[in-house]
Length: 403
Image 1 (cartoon, rainbow, N blue to C red):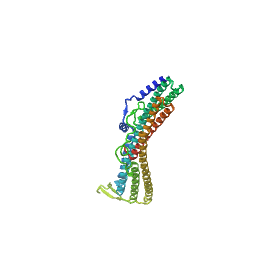
Image 2: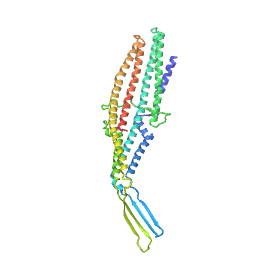
Image 3: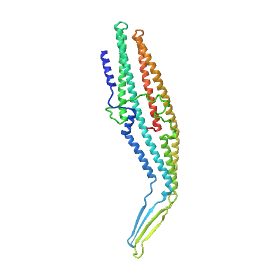
Image 4: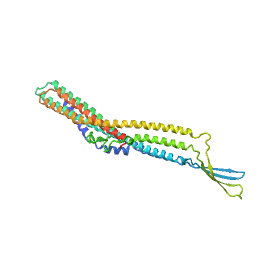
């Protein structure tokens, strides 16, 4: 019965380890996501909408035409009125337009950066699940080898049947743990398929190293750039652009209080045929009788103050987030290196020594069980810390607006 279980495990291991047709690297995953994810089109739409809003802010008002007829005279009069108040508001409206376009550009950068974080997280989550599956497969193979050792010692009368059964039970536990990891790896690949807008029915297999970027001399997001200043963060650029647009709208509302005349031009004809056609040229001046524009200025002043306070709060919050993200990256890198270079190496050495002693009949099975379980726990911890490092890199890259 146990031999059949071993053969079944080996068959599952071969099936799991067989390479799939659709394998991809991190760069390929990012490229696929940028070409297939709807969020990319959304980022382009955000930028296009901001450009449209910028053009609306500097829109020149159309003239209005008026035709008057008098059947008794009979006369015809046509007048065209062109508002000129936009001339005094033009500099402020142009500032609003620039701020809206800058806000849209920063927003689209942030959307693409968030997409990159989503893909990076899904990629390394799948890679971590595969790595954990590989380590647990090694554990299961070691446990099965231990069963063969126990059977040989049982045949020579060196151990009891109970001890042999205990070893077989430990092998079954290792196999069950491996089976659970196999499920996690399959689900992680489906999440990666979603992140790159691929078919979930045939999820791709990630190819790469889980410790990518861990041994770099300078800890950054892996693109060679040093950490940016807070002012360069796209989220802060969005807040500053909103504040600049609100301040420019306030200036425009103040200039709008001026009673700038409208240009009036036209002509009158008909009536006495002996008289020539008359030309009309003049101005029409708005009379601030019911409102002097103070209400619009008050609303714009409040909006400008509100956006300025939001920008100041965003600067404080993002400065803290940037420092925290850099700290998490640095600390997670230290833990990942320690788990990979120290803990895992020691756990494997302890397990190998315990197995050698058991094979030579110089120790019981309990120290071997402890060594196997310790290595299993350390392997999980190593994968968890390496994944935490990659997630910290992805978070910092997204915060800095890197694609």
